[in-house]
Image 1: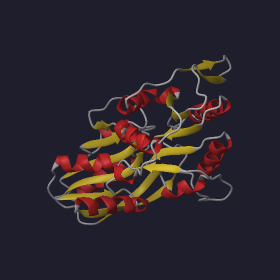
Image 2: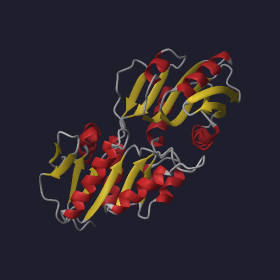
Image 3: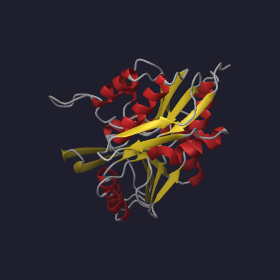
Image 4: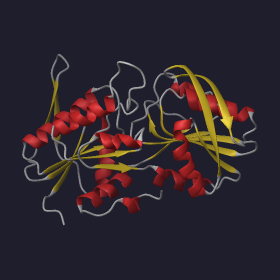
Amino acid sequence: MPTSPVKFFAGTNTRYLAEKIVKAYGTELGKSTLIKFSDGEFQPCFEETVRGTTVFIIQSTYPPADNLLELMFMIDAARRASAYKVVAVIPYFGFARQDRKDKPRVPIAAKAIADMLGAVGVDRVMTMDLHADQIQGFFNFPVDHVYASALFAKYIMELKLDNLVVAAPDMGGSKRANAYSRFLKTEMAICYKTRRKENVVEKITIIGDIKDKNVVILDDMIDTAGTITLAADQMMRYGAKSIRVIATHPVLSGPAYDRIENSAIEEVVVTDSIPLKYGSRKIKVISCAELFADVIHKVYTFQSISSSFIF
């Protein structure tokens, strides 16, 4: 059993989710403040003792980089205040798309961030649906990789769609789509896309039978929504009955909201790992708070977390 008390704190821009997580856990957020200086510099501060406690700091690291910087400062502050253990709960791990050198003279940013988190003294990281599973290997300490499939698979089954097909928006998402198709016992389709440049898809080819099917496109995130809206429109031209999109992280930058509203997509289902910038009649949010609360409890009490995931 744990030998130290537990305390929860939240970064500024993930407080909305942290409050739901601690409520599901059965406790309250610790008191902290963020002092801002006129030049943009900031200083987080714990307003209560953390000495000898296991500290969970909840903060997604979506842009701007201030979110990542605030998380690192809070980890450093907890370590210097003699916390027993410091766990970073990062529902959305930003910069994860930079997980390899895909062209000359570029950083592997995901690895650099893993190194920085280790350098400031974090003992453990908890995150959800990394852009690439191998990012876990960038860390030199334990990583608890939470899967939103426990939430989404249940939602898909509750829809009770006939002639269901799950689809991957690109070749990289085929593993995820295959896992869902095996669990749901459905057919699978894959979108093959070619790009002119980053965030601009030139052409999509559909591989698989989608005629008269209810299609659910699965992805780890939606950024500009160019891929999924183009894929949805293409699938409708191929005779699909309906198109839904399920994606863990609603990055939704640039023209994403307008593209979704004007597309053939019937519904977009996301988690609250990142706050929505705007409301939309097509976007449904499923909270990941209870999932994180369950995993945090199991980690804190030294239980296996594998039972929290269905696949």
